[in-house]
Amino acid sequence: INRKTRVWTIPAERTKNGHEHQVTLSPVAIGLLKAAYALAGDSPFVFPDKKDGTSPMNQGTLSQAVKRNLDTFEVDPFTPHDLRRTASTMTRGFASEKCVEKVLNHVPPKLQRTYDRHDHMTEKRQASEPWAMKLVMIIAGHSATVAVVPAAPP
Image (tube, rainbow, N blue to C red; front, side, top):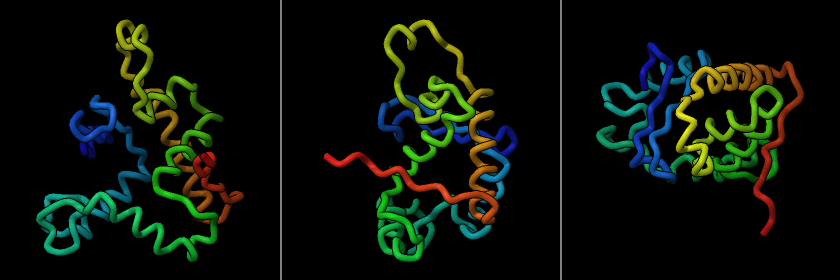
């Protein structure tokens, strides 16, 4: 995470599609990360394992926490992965479909991968900042709540 450029680079070996992914971080995200760093103490991880902080938080921890707290959220059951769908749906109002695909780290068709080398960082930042402000408004109670968009039934 580069706080100066406000970019989180996820290495290829950590992504589902095997491609490095650069996530633009809004000022809101940077503020939340600063708070997480402070809570992490001396750990080299932003979200350390709660035992001793020498390893990252387990991949299933967030899903377990969501499941445990569904009653307090007062929403229909969801998983953390459903939040990608929600973000994509909400972002459609102020970002192009291509930009949303880049934000989600979807692999474009072969022709596009071959010829379009633009990183879309400016567009991704333009999408992430209004999204972050929308979330702040929702949390503060200044806007209608947003329903999490669950996966379609099988």
